[in-house]
Image (cartoon, rainbow, N blue to C red; front, side, top):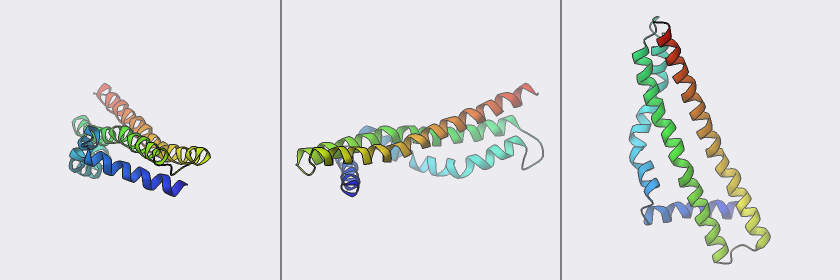
Length: 143
């Protein structure tokens, strides 16, 4: 049942593409920026904290935080995209009599737990971003 639910979920993404689902389009549009920011943000944050060149620099730290915020935004945009694909999958499975009552519950449960991996990623990213912001504010207080 899990495999059928996941396959239907992926078909849900195909339907999102076909129907030009706005959040999927937004997520796709920022992928190039996310690729760059995810590769550079940690290094720039380390440089801003002084781990690379010996002296902390709040401006460089802020640039790194802004880059990291782009990846955080991506994780937040991903949430409704994934939940929508799962909703589409469950409606399709039920509407086409692919699943019975108990199977529908199992499919919903499988997709719920899969979606929670995205929730954990988003919460983790937001928490890390807040931590970096606090580091930045603390570094400015030392000046």
